[in-house]
Image (cartoon, rainbow, N blue to C red; front, side):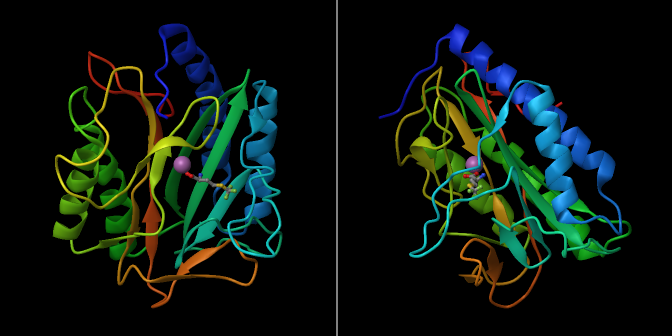
Length: 256
Ligand code: MF3
Ligand code: CO
């Protein structure tokens, strides 16, 4: 079931998103060569708590058999890791790396969810392009997030744009509805056909999240049963925001 949020509920989601944005700023201030991904997790968690929110990712069940629930506030996926990388004191960022950071909050019972890929120091031209294409893909997608369109219009716009840029999209993971739960209906795939899927309506909140590969979109899960990485070891990028569909166009909650 797709839930429709009223203005009061959207306000609450915005408050949750304020805490997320504070955490994103704290992460941005601390990304540099030599920092561990666990440290980024700590600064993000502290910022969320300071703003009255709790990390939404803690306790998310592992989708793979035998895996443990997620224990961290953020995901940190480095280079060929695309999503769900686990923060660690032994993963030290170095010049030229790109790190995809994904985070979510709950505040007063309402969720927000966002992600970014950051360069560490000076990065290669292809990494620059990957970061730009993931972000631009989000904006191409959100242009379709208007009442009367369908979910497939968002998916198709993202796919068409990214493939034209010579990159590929992860198929096994997708965006989603969001509200009192971080993951609600509908699913928002990054590939699809125009005019298909559920119809969009004012008051729907969605997390739109293109996940992009330099090479083939074939991925595997690492031994930690969380981290998803590309089989061909090529680079990846990611960009996500929580948005609300309104009659005056989409509103992005998790972007400053
Ligand atoms: N942020 C992811 C999403 O966008 C969810 C991550 S769940 C976690 O759907 F457990 F890995 F953190
Ligand atoms: Co999400």
